Image (tube, rainbow, N blue to C red; front, side, top):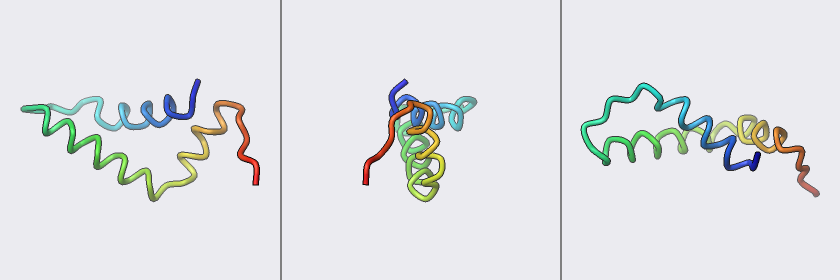
Length: 57
């Protein structure tokens, strides 16, 4: 799995039961989740770790 797959998995899990009236509601929900993820680097690290890839310093 690519790191982006892990990130999308986190986003989809958060909006799974969303009842949206229109595409704008879905877009705002996805943007909110991405904004939350910016402040949770351990979640992003977990997505990267799930791939077996390692960041070089």
